[in-house]
Image 1: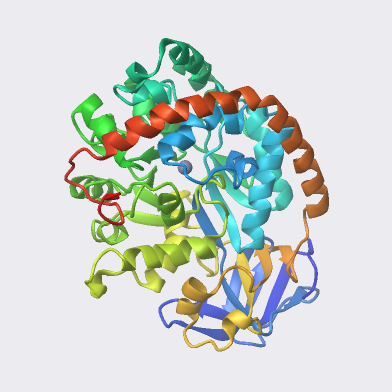
Image 2: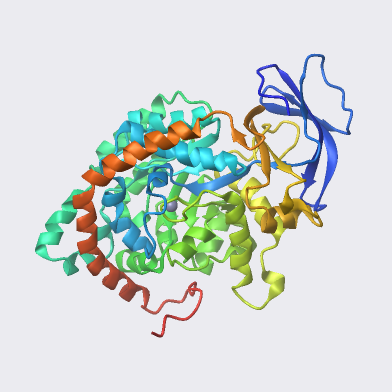
Length: 504
Ligand SMILES: [Zn+2]
């Protein structure tokens, strides 16, 4: 394949374009002007003189996958935990995230962006984190990482004004007075100060391929005043809102105790549920919640890998789709998934639906999964008219899969192969906005050896300074790890665990 070029026209010749409806891939030529697809036609399509020619023979071309939910900061915590429930992961947040410099924030985002593009993903909704509140400098460092890798992103700083320990009714009372004092270190900045910071970032955001959004991280970790401020920010700047809603059963129980309703009903009453709103996970949404989201044109980012890894259960994607909820697919952060492989996320979305009951007609099809990971995620990112499909007028975000790779021998059904067989190793090249970012399996924009060296230095430095936070986690684990599973055993009208409770 020809290498990257800034020439105005590019013509991709001889590749096979995936057609999801026909479940096949036919040879076409694609003419690209700048960063946008100008024309798709039969092989031999006319191109302006001087156009860069890309030879895509023996390649299947599919729209770049779009990760509807991840956390750039999670990449430095890749593989740190095993037996972590969501509540234990939240308890570990100081251990995982404290002591981070601007350089660490940049590096963590870059690790994820590099992994995503090398595995066929061209855009992500990234719920970033800074503690005790977001900063323009921190967000800019993360945005710079995406821009240097050459990937699109929507960056939404996670914000809260209530700590995890206060948000779960009864939990604080279980901590000893000494531990109660220690968890003061988890306290966020006041919500008005956080809102001012977000305003500042939204007002003068200079990045092109990286947009900003608003993420009240977990509804009951935010006061109502703060949730309303987030709603208004998103409306005033016309950006998305993204929140972890009903990810775990513990959260739903906490929501009932706090609001007397489901979390989604509470957010809806405050006016947050609309077409710019994305629920992360939604494992424990009930039927009314899903209808509410569907009626309002909202989205769910479905992260089956994370949901299994953290023991949150299996989200009901079928009921979401039949309630007209827009569903995108995500990996979630690398500290709870522990990779950023959208092919794996698609495969798990398919498999998760197939263990939920014997009515095979209700299982999620590979075509539905693939549409969710492209068009569905694009809509969640607020980019449904620009990315997620390969058509004239859409951005030239194209993944070239090697049809001579063992994953594709034979190719009986291109859609099934992409969702059930492909694991990222068959990705040959990746184009984003008409520019080659991965070519012949090599990331062109980042030196991985250099990245590894910098990240190792960062890891050693943080391992030393986070020793007290790790020790605090170990003390808290005993309390959180008993109290929260107890809450999760309370009766509820929603059932999402993969099996009955452990009998042993
Ligand atoms: Zn998340």
